[in-house]
Length: 463
Image (tube, rainbow, N blue to C red; front, side, top):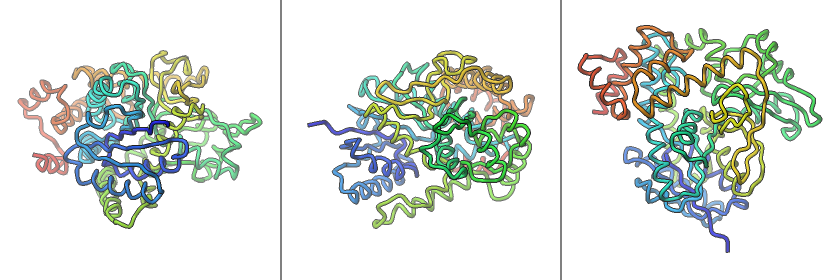
């Protein structure tokens, strides 16, 4: 008799956990799961326990004999795991709010995975994921790590390059949403379309073809410019792209490209929210509170519709499909973060890129795109350099490298204010940045203070 699968989810107290359960339940006939372990930290105890009870109700309602466990000791969970998924946020939502508000207080973009906020999310996350990998080497050396902790591409690159863990795939919901919504906009069956994606996490483009090989990219661009929903995540303001630019490139940019192609308008919108209703992180905190109130309902045994309002909707389902494709060697087309291996010739072979792949027992096998036009080539090379500096700084705690990453990032105007934002974020996140300990102590001796009052209130509460 075949042994049941053991799945471990680190960050089990996430509001996305019910979606993860839904994805596993609908694939149970292909994935013989026996036990699921939800791992979290003590600060997340209330949420992970709510998620665990809700998850167990979902499995019981489905009629499958699957046991959901909770632990605050990840080593207990990792032993003999088959698949490990990661969906954690170091510093909780309060850290995201700091990432957003400190840059905005200096008039520059504050966003979860882009600009200064994305760099600091990597600084906090990469040391933790590398510790997890060391535990996996000892306790579940044959497991696959399916990462959807942001910034997914940089975290995946750290795991593979610095953690030396090859059995890792990074996921994002943005390509998934595009491939769900574009067929609707074109009024065609999704199975009639062929997709090819190229780029980096939250910085990719794609083309679309029909089953006869005829290119439909321009039709999707027309639908997008006509205001149809072609898959913009809920967390991104819908500023339209310039039609002349998009038609000329004849590639469909991802939603996050708005931060680069329409930086002025996106910054103005972010500043408006910063000064009025609060940043996206503050809004998400309210949404999460409502979701967990729903999850507490002892009669709720299915994913509530309200979860789709989160910007990361559907990514958990992608994780389940990725696991299914590996376990059953399905050779499924998915868009994932994996080693380049020549898919983008202008980037190093071992760079982590987000491209179309076929997923099977061997992992992700990337589809080669070939040479890119000048603009896309230049963007990717600069963004990859920024990512590499960010990852190295996260691993080493090198302040000079952190400044290099800031200088390379298109969303951070270089100069004295950039350095101030860097210094304030280091102070604000000091509990989660042990690699920068000596730099932070030096900044504290220099009496570096934080400008934003909301961030100061969060820090005071954390003490």
